[in-house]
Length: 287
Picture: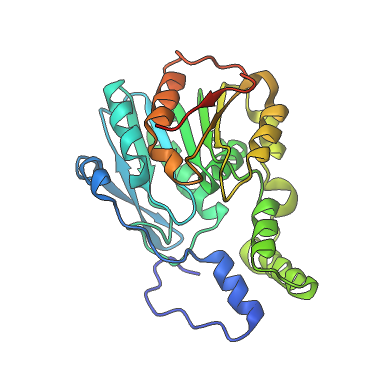
């Protein structure tokens, strides 16, 4: 769908259409929280034309040593407010955006391909990144972008969705779909959302693991209600010595981004003062 479309979206008429619509569209737009507004107000706002609609971008700092921050599903760039403040203190220049259908951007939804288009455009504008940070769906989009030319020296992946199949499996389990409706949903995703993309293979973190030749920090909460903590262990095992896994407690899937201990851990990693290799059993208690 054209991201610039402003007309009301027709209501789905069948159960299969309703579930497809539920899967592909954010269920509402989150608003900036009071403690996020100061960071947003000092950002330089820009716009990118992606798919015929405007995507809002945010940049901070001098432009030197840019760090790309990519939010997850039903989220927005402002969720990185605390990390933005810390990165500025370290002389880094945060860069972020509201994905289509999120935050202040146009549209009613976004795909991994939309995320990738924005990431590529920002990469061209900034000439590569000192580091990239992604949360959940945004982390998966970053891994996929490595095959599209994304260049970085370090990566942080928080609450990472391991692959597109995990998203669909979780959705079908949560909605208790019967086998026929499950097949219908997957067929529609193939035909309408990602035609010709081989999404069940290519849209996987592990598929792009060989391209990760830089230090990687994985952060995941042991009580994550959206992406099981076992997925972080799975990814850490796949990346071996290239990855460091930090497991937090009592933060869940969303609060983890604003946690002071997570912000501190990410900042130390990006400046090279946090060990780059894997640390089995490393834990950071929530504060």
